[in-house]
Amino acid sequence: MNRDGQDERGRRGGQESPEDGIRAVSPREAGADADADTQARLSALRRDINAVDEELLTLLNRRAELSVRVGECKRSGGRSLAVFQPRREREILDGLHRRNEAMGGMLPHQAVEHVWREIFSSSRALQQSVRVAFLGPEGTFSHLAALECLGHSADMRPVDDFHTVFREVADARCELGLIPLENTLHGTVGQNFDLFAEHAVHIVGEHYSRITHCLMSAEADLGLVRRVYSHPQPLGQCAGWLRAHLPGAPLLPEESTATAARRAAGEAGAAAIGHPGLAAMLGLHVLAAPLEDASGNWTRFVLIAPGGPEAATVRTASDLPDQGLKTSLLFTVPHRPGALAAVLDVLARGGVNMTKLESRPLRGAAWQYVFFVDIGCDLLRPVHQDTMNALTAACQSVRVLGVYPQSEPH
Image 1 (cartoon, rainbow, N blue to C red):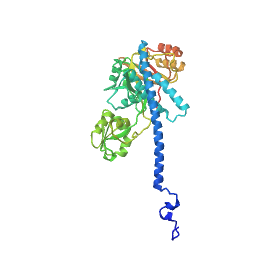
Image 2: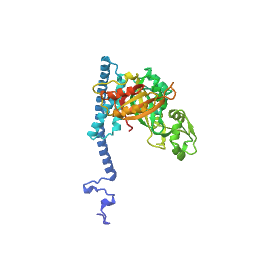
Image 3: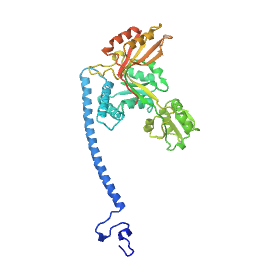
Image 4: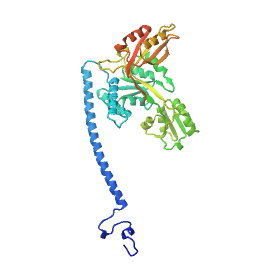
């Protein structure tokens, strides 16, 4: 105590005097000790992560070696088996989802699927280059859907129109093509149903892609935006947001969202509406998202491969059961009352679920139609042989477009 009756340590800001024999730790020093402890724990955790990464890399390279051997085995067997095997990939993903759930894994199923789709993509590329035709230019919704579905190791080939997508695949210049068939807001893409009747291709898979829009610009501030470019459809889908946030900005149509984004990238005061992935691809700022007035906008894409109905799908004893499979057909019926009803009755009696029915004008035959139908099973399995026979008898013509794993929006 000093002569004023105060503890000398209190007067010196809480520090111990030398004669106390114990030195107090200041708040700054205590904080430094805590930081050092945190850094030590972080360093230990990062060493563990580095060790896990090395294990992962070793295992991924081991998997890649096995994938190359699978390709060699296919070629040595004398059969021309496609590199893209959607049933096998779906089987792997379903198994991973079950195991992830059983072990209480922290990663959501969608994250696991995204990682493995890139693994599949690189494995396919090691076996053979997979060329994929899609409606370009790069950065369109078709391009981004193809990347979601097939990964970044696929050889993406943008083309000018859907007819060229079909022709590139039918003529075997591309192993696969991706085309949109229907959208939850705008209905079917009728032209693409017609193109199936003109080209020897078949469906090997499907993919649902969520259509979401953002406002992208080279400008970093929404207040600097003076005009907005996009395809007319996204401009319409985002009309409410545009009226509320950019009421005076001219809305300028372009042939695609990708073209609009590239134009906005080079103009001061310009912005574009398109997929957030397009903004990332071009290094543009995302000023606002999502913009669409109605949620739940999904597009169903299908993957097409060369070959007519005889090349629909390779079947083995290890095929997946009916659950999770879809058959797509084209058929025509006699031009008489009740002909279509007879076909629907065949499907009903066979106990198979029809999930889509689309009619298109039959070219060269006025007022007659070709029908596109999706059925929720593998209609070519022996258990459905009676149904398939009855369907063939009820129709003028039947063409199996493909049997493939059914996908779901997620």
